[in-house]
Amino acid sequence: MLIPADHPPIPTRKIGVLLTNLGTPDGPDAKSVKRYLGEFLSDKRVVEIPAIAWQPILRGIILNTRPKKSAHAYGLVWSEEGSPLAAITRRQSQALQGAFGDGVMVDYAMRYGNPAIADRLTALKDAGCERILIAPLYPQYCAATTATANDKAFAALAGMRWQPAIRTLPPYHDDPAYIAALRTQVEMQIATLDFVPDAVIASFHGMPKRTLQLGDPYHCHCQKTARLLGEAMGRELVVAFQSRFGPAKWLGPATDETLEALPAKGVRKVAVIAPGFSADCLETLEELAIRGRESFMTAGGTDFAYLPCLNDGAPGMAMLRTLIARELAGWIAET
Ligand SMILES: C=CC1=C(C)c2cc3[nH]c(cc4nc(cc5[nH]c(cc1n2)c(C)c5CCC(=O)O)C(CCC(=O)O)=C4C)c(C)c3C=C
Ligand SMILES: [Fe+2]
Ligand SMILES: [Fe+2]
Image (cartoon, rainbow, N blue to C red; front, side, top):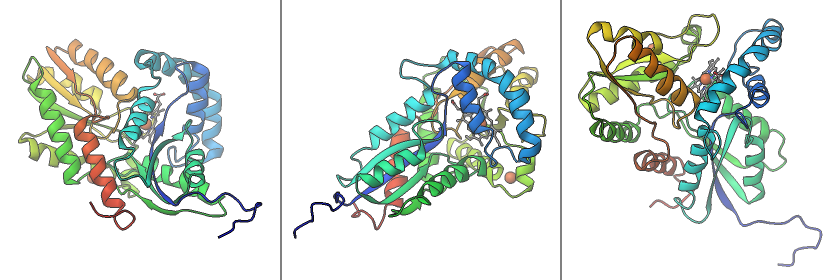
């Protein structure tokens, strides 16, 4: 068939997978952190205080004090590849390239900062992806993470003349593939320690307690993950919630307070895991592995190990291939 010279280009039809995660500053400096926090903490899904009351606090106080402190913390975990969260998410996306056949492109984007969700969705569409799976890499659903990432994607679609068909990856907090990946990885990690932990602490990112009362399933998803992983490992896990932000009451018990209280109860050797994070980041590498260790050892602990997240290791990547292939059913030939 003859295509007129002024016809827009017609790429080969493809399928896209867009991994999404939270986002991170472009650099470990106060200016980059300020820009990032300004976008993150202005999200109404994250801070559910009316803008008229919240924005003066954010712009007048928080963005003038927190960036310097946070930039210092980022500096402690920054790598040659950049922010750990960005570097690991990039590697996860690269490792999945080609895993679902030649016609499936895999890319990644961040809810805040770069690479932006709108830019990567447009790039996939321009490359011929007429069907796209958006995969927020949050095992536990939370409006402040899963929903806002999807909102951002749908906002980008709202501006497209020719929209791709869209699917979104559901939360996978109780998926047997996720629990099995966690179990394999955690048991392997514990086997390499030079001590036997008295307790394994499962630390999840916290949330304002009010969100639970308003119907967000995040708390229940975290508890179920910990219960299923504990059952799979044949030991009960200690569940705690970290990263409290602001004066409101957050989900408890708090990870820092839990770590400080354990030695007095005779628990002197601990392993800490963070099953809610699909990639290590500031909250795990600085808050848990550095500050958590300090709190525990100062309180009388003798042995502390932070066990890294699934990241782009074999168990986690096998799990992502399983979950994503399932969501692509009917779009790609069954294997
Ligand atoms: C894994 C799930 C996450 C939930 C739930 C979550 C809720 C949430 N977070 C804040 C405030 C901050 N979080 C920050 C960092 C951060 N948070 C998550 C994940 C969840 N947040 C990740 C993966 C990261 C790390 C990003 C990185 O660059 O490595 C920060 C910024 C860091 C700092 O300045 O301390 C803030 C602030 C709120 C208010 C909230 C719930 C509503
Ligand atoms: Fe957070
Ligand atoms: Fe609950």
